[in-house]
Length: 546
Image 1 (cartoon, rainbow, N blue to C red):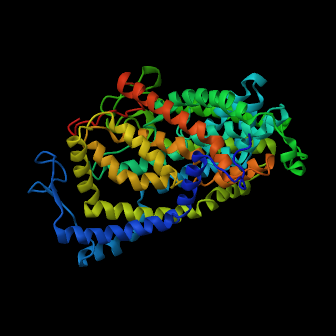
Image 2: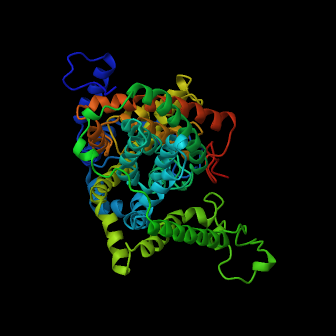
């Protein structure tokens, strides 16, 4: 099987459908342009709503924070003189105070240092090469999931490596590419660790939750427990699809269709002795950091009732990150998770780099961090326009108005129960086909759906968790995913006649099986077993009194 060739005169209805999605997706403007359009449209719509007198009764009880005296929610126009002044005087503030911006920049400084030192590449190769041949598919899918902690490292390193490993074992290289791609992209929201995407999404969720409850805060670790459990689910499903659906369909690898010049090059780079030493040193550094973190996070209650063990009463900094100053936010450890991510990646990267020779002095450290920042130029531009859109949406009350109206509509049609998450996850998966960026989609969707579903009694943490399922599953069949073109180029090295429809049809079984299995797992985990989805992350919206 090589997929549908571009010049094939007859295509199946499925191929025509997938190609239509690709063509439609290419018609959309750049996400930056989209947010600029959304911001302008919000201004115009606020003027129209104010002129038409759009309003809705506020369902919150009297005396609730933010509730108007007459109990009505009205559209606030940004087209008048007050609106113009508000926009012009807050343009910079909207950008600099946008919650995801600082957290992503700080976390990526540490991750970038670990990446450019070679630590992440060596760790992934060590994980894959360190398992028996029979478990190589499991290792590749699992390594792909784990690579999400380091953002794009899995796309750049693991996916071509998966194909090369399979080829060296006499198996079809496209099966290895598909297994790695499924783990890296299809399992994007499953992981044993927290990564840069967690504080980013949590920041957007916090901004959106505050459209309904002004003091609500969402921790970057709010979906951690569910992510850990999902790691084993996606590893199992991805392995099953690879072994029983993808490899049999691909059949025997045809070397005549491949780029022989490229295949003649060395395909596999095993760890050197120096890299092994570097990994050992980085592991030792991580163990030390874990011990230090445990010392700093020892649970000691609140400042008023510290309950510090006698042996540690006089030790400086003991339990400093375990203090619970605000029960709603949890211990300081969770609030400072971005700083901890930065420290772990940065220190481990420096230790590894010093041992293998990729980091010799402070200039190399600074250069590595600088490289990680240079890749964020387009993201920073996107954030500027996204921040304006989010703030405009908040100021106009359009989000709150739509949330209340949407919640009432859902209740009227009898969908004010857990079944709403089926439609929500499917909607996220569908939108993901035409809008690739996880943060861009959530920045657009969260201001509408988070307040609306909070109206139904569900927590922002649970809503974000459901979003991440839909956002992940269809990554592997979305031409709008930023690395899709690069994966296509990798695939063409093993089959020169591979077309865009070929890569989509290759990955389609993963998308569908992940979606079905993950939704079912979500309902069992959340609504049947009622297990916690993360630290201090409720399933249902707590009352303001609590």
